[in-house]
Amino acid sequence: MPHRLRRPRPPLPRFAVAWFPDFAGMERIEDFRQRHDPMASLVPAHLALVFPFATAQSALQVETHVQRVVSRHPPIAIAFRPVRVFANEFVFLMATRGAAAVVELHDRLYTRSLRPQLRTDLGYEPHITLARNAELARVEAAYAEAQELFGGEVSGVLRAVTVLAVGQDGRIERLKDIALNTA
Image (cartoon, rainbow, N blue to C red):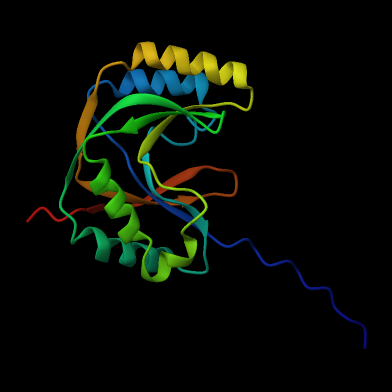
């Protein structure tokens, strides 16, 4: 009996969790990202709390887990100020005030069903990506420009997170906004 060729399985769905800040000055950040971050056309400036991961879980299962975690966490006042180069490829706007609370929320999100998705090889430091480029000279130029443009502090309150679907083409779809505990 001849063997039938099996069709390859479709790729697993990919999800992520992020906060989309709305503080004053976002247009400057987005303008900068349009010039320096190849992801700018795919997703607005954001603070990633759970990085994109492939899973056999459904969107509802991921949303339920996120709801369970964030509904117990109070809103977080957060400020961003220093600009930093990371891995000679990225320029980050780093969180200062509120960073420890964001790290705590990040750690709680990576529990239970999301625990296997946690990357232990990288420490988590809350940030917004401003630029990315593999050419060091371009990263250095973007860093110098960012230091000039973003010398002051920007701040806001993290009141809700968004569960995202990440397409194979890198496009981001907002699935559900989930509020933190406001009681």
